Image (tube, rainbow, N blue to C red; front, side, top):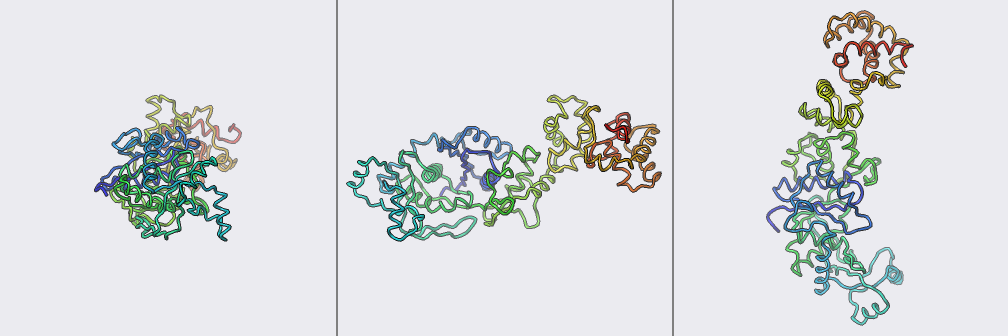
Length: 493
């Protein structure tokens, strides 16, 4: 084995990137970076019916958004390219030929129906699969099958011995001799299968560690057998170490399917998860930095990541916990960084134009520090600050908020607020706060919650908003008083 760690991330470009896939990418990236090694990004796109360029571009978009970079790959180059399997067919054909000539592969002509009939004749379950019948066909038998018009698949001759390895996550694993039927590596039409292409690429690219999902564990004995065959023909120098990562579970303790909306990575980006928060949470899906600590930076993740600390137990994706952890990272952002990251969400909500004016940005900067303390995802900022940007003719309190807080019994509160605020000589946060407290808490004898809820809804349109007094200062005297008057019973539209 080489002294330098060489890990790989080798997805098939099908569908939208999902959290389980990106968790695998993250663990390989963190492992490679922790050990000062290389990460190879390889695209396994030999299935023309399912693979798409759109999915490939989405993979690039997802990895680049999260800052998971790679050292070798389709766009980065490297000495072991090409890094798209669709461009490596001649390599697979040549190695399959060499394996066949060496007796490591053999031609198999049996149909699935024939295999099932042979199993039944022996009193065996036909679901057991291929029975290795074609291993020792004579040349005459093979010629007879060809004369019938049959085209053979190429199967790997599995060794007659136990296949075992020390899994980096799960410890010692062993499959007894004879438990794994000889697998197909090349289809009858000459197309190579994953069972051939994946280990061949790992061997030629000198991959030292294979960290992949638990669902692929049953294929590992076949891959180990192929590595040994590749060593015997001089293609592979060693067998990599394997580590099988735990399942990511969704609601109801079911494996999180890539078709489940909860698994779509871009849904989290669109909601306003930030890179730092999402990577932190994804790392917790099977790993922890310490028993008493859930939040950490990306640099701390790289510094602490050890594959031996990955749990073999399934990890449950908990959206609420993901939001809470993301909120910690949002609050830790530099103030101007937070301002800039939220601007696209304000634009998407129609609150800022494509080219915001300096006045609009200044207003956002003023309120942003107060919003930053109240959001867990960036997308939450837009509804919180909508009241600051929407034209007055379009402003209206949310229906539920108005129904609960702007009922007829709110009229004394609103009138007292208007009277107190109209008398203010200066429109500043401290003066607004004092005037309202004097009028509502002292003057009307109300508890703060009952006193200020109607005012908050009248001003911001919501029951949850940035601090009320600062918001009113930003809106200005005339707008604030106008909204309080419009909220009076009989005036609301």
